[in-house]
Picture 1: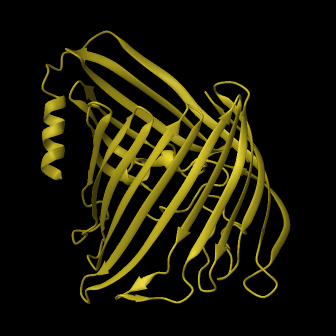
Picture 2: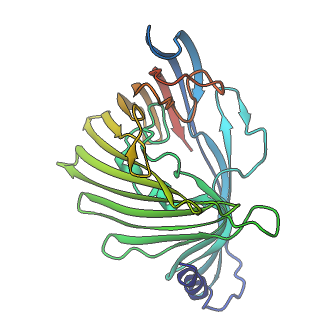
Picture 3: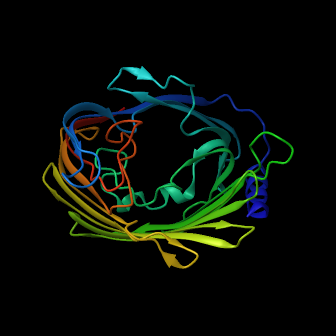
Length: 349
């Protein structure tokens, strides 16, 4: 993995790095806000949270990106992107540049970026979730759907619809004994109505006590330019190195969309099986999620939408929505079933 990334970066830098006088900078962003009615729980299991309204922001962001022509098809590129909360009217209070942020090179050999970026595991199969980045977001690929700090990222050119993305993040935690490192990759295909992706991710703990791996595969097909059908699979394994004990979980996702004029209908159903520890299934540790909704395109960049989503937890699990969990940072009790009904607006600029 590391050797492949080094070769890719060297290939990108092969042309002469003479300066050019042409450059461009663009401002971009997304504002996605929904009014939601939320509740959770049943009379006999979990914590009852009823009759609450909230304003929620989903994957809203503000960014600046640009490029400079260097020579012979080589470009220098940069991007600085941060979260914003349209519901509160604030940028992220912690720092600027918390989303995809980095500096790199782009050429006919591909693109390389150093910084903080979405992992291939996170982005490889976003087509399979019609609610991705919005209210009703499916939880099937948590916890490895992350942005990785301190990472070296490479995207190959696309050949006949296929492309490769790789990343490696060396030890980033403080201290000379730190052993945290991460790597992964994805192979994706998109052409003639067919979308497909396979992704892998590896995380090593800072104290070297555990290693975690994730495997994701998804495929989708578009019929008559109006209807899409998708299926996805995810498997996670966390291994305690000293005891050689594996903790495993698996998830399936089924989804579909149908476009009728300016209206897009969306539906998704996810199933996560029981957690297995050392080969033994743990009782009541699975969950299911259903999301259904529709959106009306006011323009190419603006949509109003409605969505209903419910997570049905087994008695020993407390899976919640992410982002914007029901009951905020307090969360829910095991066995509770969070649900929401939202009406929102999404605008990209």
